[in-house]
Image 1 (cartoon, rainbow, N blue to C red):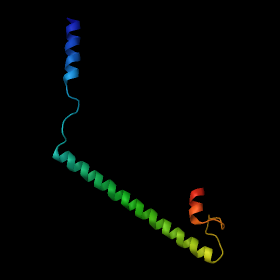
Image 2 (cartoon, rainbow, N blue to C red):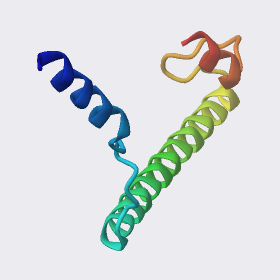
Image 3 (cartoon, rainbow, N blue to C red):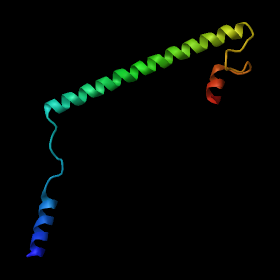
Image 4 (cartoon, rainbow, N blue to C red):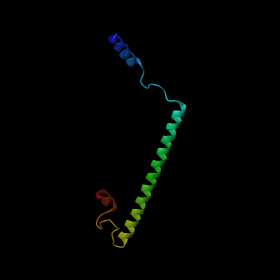
Length: 86
């Protein structure tokens, strides 16, 4: 009897679908909202980084025009070279 119960349990486990159910409209809407939120946050982070880069480039250009290196930048390197080092 125990062997037969084991066979039935194994057959049931093998024939039962594992999470093969379609997402509901509500779940899809939630996923879309999460993706939109992540996209907005990502775009904001990129915009912030671009702004910081532009500011650093302006400071470097101003200090290079005066013959001085910007803080934390070696006078003999370009901003691109400094970015690769640090």
